[in-house]
Image 1 (cartoon, rainbow, N blue to C red):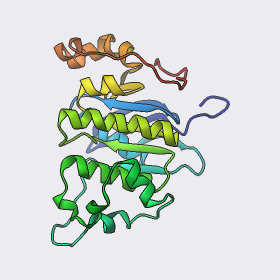
Image 2 (cartoon, rainbow, N blue to C red; image 1 turned 180 degrees about the horizontal axis):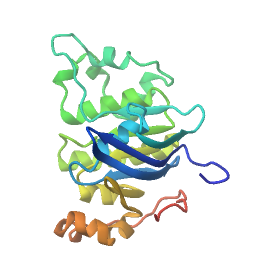
Image 3 (spheres, rainbow, N blue to C red; image 1 turned 90 degrees about the horizontal axis):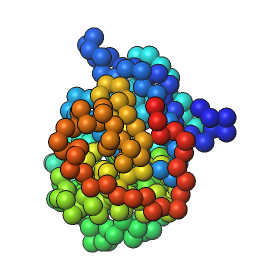
Image 4 (cartoon, rainbow, N blue to C red; image 1 turned 90 degrees about the vertical axis):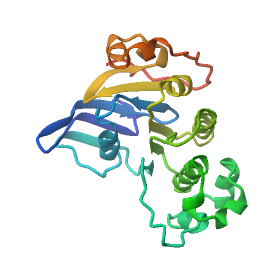
Length: 244
């Protein structure tokens, strides 16, 4: 940690095993407010396991997870099992959390129409479901949003809109955002910092820097060479933590 403790979460040499198989090894990672961080890596790299350790669903086999005192984390899992026989409307689903913000404000922010509140959650489209999950997380007034594959089941245009929405949320609520994504083009065009994972952190930093890293090139091959990277035009500051 830095002396002034600007971090909201820090993982210190975290490792994790399952059935004697190494899933994560010596992860050192800090997360900050007002920053969108994308976690990428091939299938089996340990991304979902790392997310679950961050939010407290799993305990590391070794190492330590430091949390800023009083931190609130809004977590959207990759999959959420909902029983189709239970009459669960969007309104009832959102009412399951203890709201710290007005519902109307969040609905307006995420462009969720009031008419959707009476809809059964399993009738929602992929994009509608992701916005409802985001609304549920934001109602809790989190310091950190953790999103596991939020673009899953959403078309390319919807993914671009989602990332634009996340940037808006970051700028308005000043929260940190950590997300897992498989779409490298969208990640590189919409994130502040990229972390490349393959059981350990292979590389991390600004998208343009990571895209040129040999470890990134080795993992993603020809796809990595086709990325169209954007130039930062944000008015927020980046931290001096972008190299291993």
